[in-house]
Image (cartoon, rainbow, N blue to C red; front, top):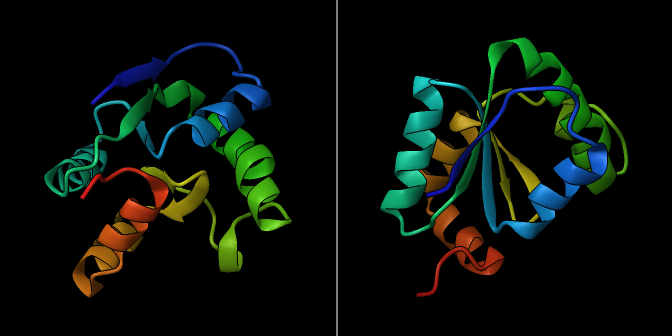
Length: 126
């Protein structure tokens, strides 16, 4: 699993969009967050190898706003998230689309929806 730290300035919206589009599974998280650790461990346990971007606390709001406006909004046809939900960290993107956070990942895993989604996104080979 590759972990990178976003620790300065604004990443261009093209950069964030490119990051999401180029990775089958990508996790944006607070640096050192235990919830993101759980998400990454679950995904690794299923055989996916998520790319993880850890964001330092002082840059969280800026990165969240950029993800909502430029990445989530462009994939859903409007800003602010799916079904009125706001993007929160850890934020998981599967197949270039915002999937949700820890609660959504856990729910999809329990119901058996997660593995087929990961296969469809190209994150699993089996």
